[in-house]
Image (tube, rainbow, N blue to C red; front, side, top):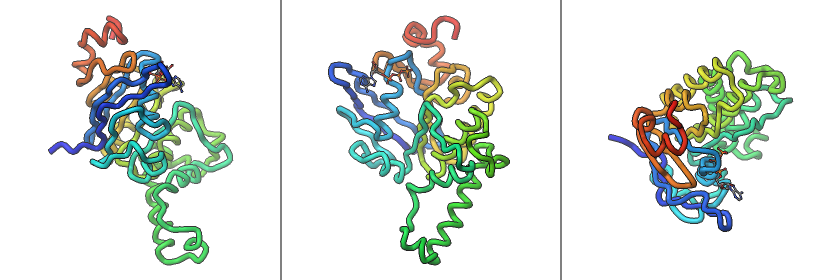
Length: 255
Ligand SMILES: Nc1ncnc2c1ncn2[C@@H]1O[C@H](COP(=O)(O)OP(=O)(O)OP(=O)(O)O)[C@@H](O)[C@H]1O
């Protein structure tokens, strides 16, 4: 049976007179990587910003695991299992890689500062649980060997992997990746492609925005295509490659 992780129904977003999103409806299922593609200005970032809670939708419904989340703040959505990365790397150069990933666990921490101060038993158990989760996430993102390196000295691609690791540290059901391959060279994109598949196989569904079509076609199970804020196609990579409206609006004849 297919389990829906994220359901988007009739999503609209306007900025004054600009209708950035026009009635989007799609789902992301368990064990699925969904690609969101389209020309510049077609509404991809607005979709991710609206899904994650950075922007309030003008209309429509967003459900996570069946629960409506469109009126919840970003932090609550993270705690419920919906997390994201941003287009630009937001990292702390003075932290170690491990310390930065630990920050990503904050949204799901149960213990309060008072418990930490007294080192209560439950708090110690949670510390151990977090350490284990951080190790798992570092392995999933290929950063184990860099765990004690300062964030400021690792490569730009590794910093992007670290952003994914930090987002995964909250143990999400669903991760939104906003142009994760930006600035990467060929072998780094291949590493990223394998990483996205591993993330999906480990139980976190993925929605990925990306302009790099080879990566999208290789990693996605299904693809949604936007143009001028409207959904013009949805299908498997093979179907999207052949879709006349998508070729005309975005891919061109070469894809
Ligand atoms: N904060 C904002 N205020 C006004 N208009 C906005 C705002 N954010 C986005 N828009 C407009 O909404 C539309 C969709 O923009 P969006 O950034 O979502 O597109 P995109 O597909 O992510 O583009 P790109 O591939 O260039 O990142 C564009 O017309 C854009 O100018």
